[in-house]
Length: 259
Image 1: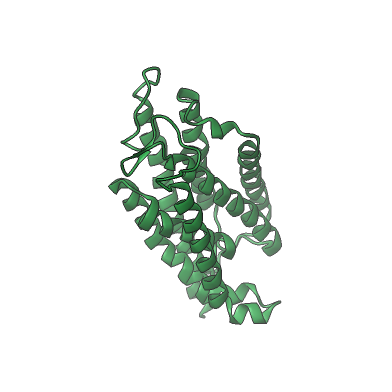
Image 2: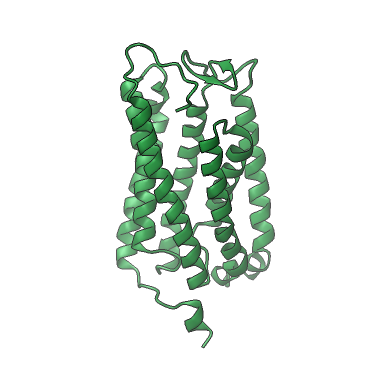
């Protein structure tokens, strides 16, 4: 929630503190999660996050850090994630071929394929964002919201919608990935828990609380398509945990494989 938002009289000002706490939980858990994912990817000589999802997430961080984010704390968080994600990108490019031995052409060009997906997502997210925050004709303007001095523009909804789509892509593709690999390569219980808690707090609970306290400005939270997407990512993540409990554990590290 932007500091420039003007709360109506019936909205308790504590909404800002609750928002800060839930976003803080999401930010901290995801920061640790990304670090552990990068480490696990390098240890297992693979990539932890599915390539398409990694391109989506990395592009989202780039566009929001450099274009959408207005407040210093937001820019800082997106920039931190963007820098940490470089470790995930490095692992994907360096070890990606190990997961595509059945399709050598993909393995040989995994870096170029990832670069193409990243460029596409950057263009797509910039297009959506610039359309959304157009000062002359903003998308779904709301009373009490403001952005860069222009009343009505709601970047909270933009953040929610883009993050929710990214979350669905990440959760569903991660479930598909572990089912195909039939192995815990690139993953761990800690990584899963941090990702699940971070998404639950920073996305579902945070925006749900904002809707509960200030429904006029957050009615999008309960639209049918968004409810479907929220249920989808939660079920996919729970399904991922079930599969993770059943697949063989991977203990080999880079050092082990070099012997």
